[in-house]
Image 1 (cartoon, rainbow, N blue to C red):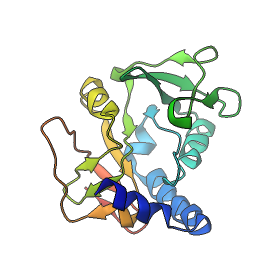
Image 2: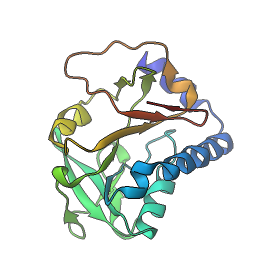
Image 3: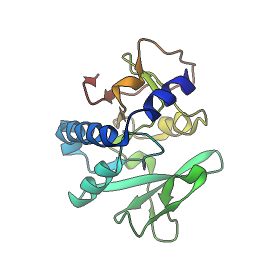
Length: 181
């Protein structure tokens, strides 16, 4: 399932992907949860994912505390960023990550919203990630009141995905067509 959904996402033309990413981002910015959040854990887009750099840049410009993850062995370390050009560099898997030298460490318990990546989602708010389990290990340590939100393209949504006991569902999924809660 993971590979077939990735192929569907990869086949969205870049121009259409950019437009859908703008629509998704605008829906995110209108959320009451976003408006009241102080600290947001985001991630830099990977391959054909929705362009979360739109959210990163605007959140920084609006004075939000923005944290991004950095892969460290089998865990994610979180760092605050305020300049995407100077504080990010290619890390594991070629994903842009915070440069530990120029960033301050963030604490999971301070997060108000966490944007959770994934390959495949269902309307029951389950997700399939890339298979590393990074977010399934991170999410239990995030503040209990933090909203777990995923952004994806509508083609990544299926009727039902199998979920294991360690899989952490999200609170909301935003696509270019809908918001699922």
